[in-house]
Structures are given as structure tokens and as C-alpha cells.
Image (cartoon, rainbow, N blue to C red; front, side, top):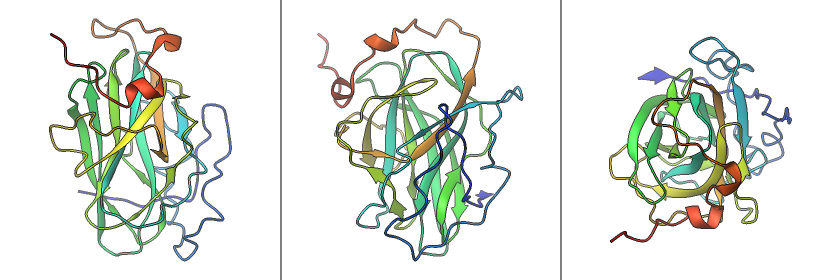
Length: 238
């Protein structure tokens, strides 16, 4: 199991927007986590050593009203062949001994069941900041959907945007289309049931281009499902 130091630092987003979500929040009693210049430093690199594009979603999300140990994922539609180089999720913990699992699950089509492609368990201190996978290399296939998020072993503070009019949100790799809660982010059988466009979680995804292969479908970003369509599975096919 990896030991995690979370960070008060921030990446530049794809648009070079400043990180605006760390201060002035209702959980002021929680200290910022000790900055870790490695796993959560200012520059994310791909497996090939190329600087990644970093998209931050919900940078100004407030802390949720109640602590919870429920799992939360954002659901993304990939519109270009990319490599997922790192996942960061913002959270706070007032309890010692917190462990979180960050996972990536993939669905070949809207409404199809998700399959786990990556997970890692991390220790998280009594503080607020970024939980990070560190460097990874997960291919994002154009035309596929990805449920990305975490669940903790005990109650934590989640940072959740409730801007119901915000989705979809475009990124370098595709777009954020919906979110959902789940008992575990790493178990098999994650479905689209109860996916929602009413809220989404504060996350950062670092991605870089990769060479397309036979799995990739040419996707017109303007034609990808909108947030409302992506919040629920397709009707069963006869």
C-alpha cells in the first residue's frame, strides 16, 4: 500500500486557470496537507516523459455538508485517444488512519457495464488536500466512458459541485458528463444506475496524446452524448 502526502499546491489546468478551491471553505479547522512535490507536484508527466495536459473539474467546489464513507465517481466520455497519466481527488479527513481507494473503470458504450482497469489504495493524513495516484499509464479509448473516483475506509469530507447547469464540461481528452455514488469504486459490477448531472466531484486528470489503435472510434466531440443522456443507461436492445 502506498503512503500518501497530500498537497496544498495546484496544477495549472489546460486553460492555465488558478486553483481557487482550497481557501475560504467551511472546514477551516482542517489544516492543509503537507505539500508533496513528487506525486502531486506542479508538472504531470506521461510514461514517455512528456508533459501532460491537466484538467481540473469543480475547482471551486464546496465541502459537502456531511462527512461520509460513500464512494463517489465522475463519469467521463473520451473523445480522443489519450493516456491517463495521473488522477487526483480533493478531500479532507479529520480522522487518523484514513485509507482511500482511487479507481478507474471503463465502459465500451453508454449504458454498458463498467470494468475495472486500475485501482490503488493510499494512506491519507488528517488534513485536506489532494489524494493522488501518482504516475500511471491507462489508455483512454476514444468512444469509451470512464468512471473515475475514490472511496474511503471511514468518513471523509468530499468536495462536490452542485451546479446542475454546468455539465457537460470539456477537457483535453473528452468531457465530464455525469457522476454517481457507489459502495465501492473498485469492485466489479459498477453500473450507470442513478448516475446524475446534478452534482460532480472535484478532480484533476492528467492526460497526454497516444497513438490511436483499432480500439479507438473516431468521435465528433459535438456529437457525444450530452449530460442528460449520459446520466442514464440506454434502453435495452432487442
